[in-house]
Length: 403
Image 1 (cartoon, rainbow, N blue to C red):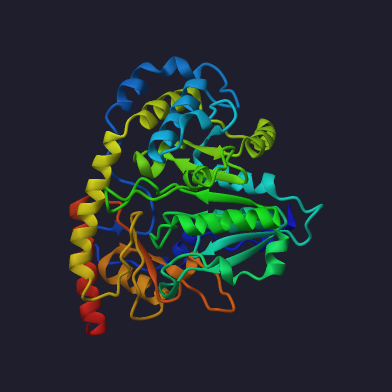
Image 2: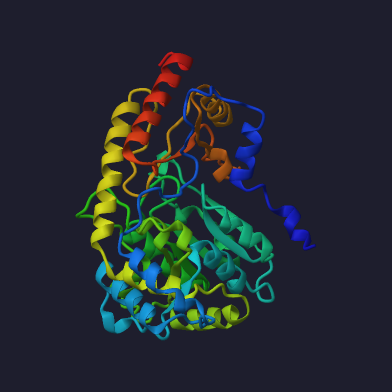
């Protein structure tokens, strides 16, 4: 087997399973899982008719580029969501449907690393981070470079902290906005700085924007990389790639549907790779996806539900745990009174609530581990279950740590 597999760290949820193995919480308390970022809201109702009538769409293989009408819907959504001139987005060259952002991010990193011209080849990524970034980088034979996101830097990537020699070896800069797990939103000036650095040192900027449609202020949607690119006059989206998904936006994690968009030259090269590798959504999935990208109302309603959950949960927990105040996403990233593994294990044992230790999502650096003494709490369950979980956490913290 590929020896690079030995360099992969255990995936966060495997580590969590090992941490909790052998512990049995009180049977009288229903288990509430807050560790996994899997939306539990009902999917939009319009998908049921498509599912009922679309069986014939499974009769043939899907094309690697995806259905033309889906690519058109994606371009229209990008245009209206990020205020991009629709004439700049070509459904034939600027977008590719994919089977969820997870496989797309992994395969894109594989396709974009060229060790023939860069040794070492580096991929710069946030820390904490979505573990797919690191895993794909290692399997491609490249070296991760971690940008710590902390409370002291407002949970934002500090591009000025990267040494020139690292930039010179960089082939890909990965940014995540809204961020998983901190909920921070990258402002336009950081995207601008990233693109200026990409021009200077010849690398790609890839933005994971899968949480872009879950934000707290309806009047302040997160800015996007392609949006900033066009504001700079990059009408061809030079060096830019973005990833989007219906999992969070439309509560369709099981559909496995998303897209990659950006620089047509990069998309074209990635398409060639995908003719061999690509996991293309089946045509029924694509039909559902097209309708989902066309409809924005269900997304507005979805945000309102998350807004209610944050308000209720923060009100219960804010005087017993130090909470961040996320601008977007559906995670809380609280500081724990003790080691995060101890906190998560004991909370599970006493209250039957599952959270994810922050160190499972981050790596040690010379500046420390930004996940230390933090846990990720995913507010994905229904409102009443989130309230019950928050009340149990409050009870556990006040009883155990005298808060």
